[in-house]
Image 1 (cartoon, rainbow, N blue to C red):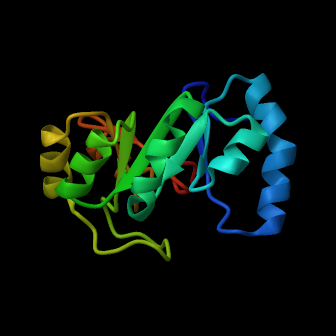
Image 2 (cartoon, rainbow, N blue to C red; image 1 turned 180 degrees about the vertical axis):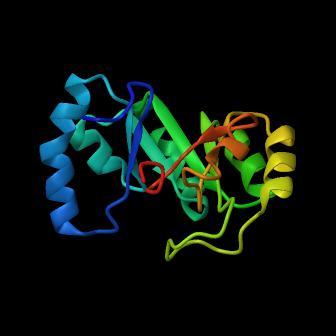
Length: 156
């Protein structure tokens, strides 16, 4: 795999059977490499594939509690100060705060902007990773204040 060793993967399948088949095939490679990988919103699939843990969408965070002892790591999506607080209260190891910049993702809402993003990160009680609209031209604008999460765009 061509990712740096410190990079992890959050796998989102949205019920797509082809994607689920893919992660079943790919997960042994991820485990062999010792790579952190989380399955989004699907703790059963995370257990089946031996994933490190689960990434919870903001709206499903309430489901995380019953899985607390099953996984090494759980993270959550956040789009506001309230969501960051909720993630911390739920015991999440980190939050992915988005969107930082305008994004082509179908799930992206109105961008937070750099100033608001930095302000939220400073007030957070746990690690935060920026997500949304990051690319080779702008990721360094947030890297001093937060980790970086990217779906695409950092390799082009």
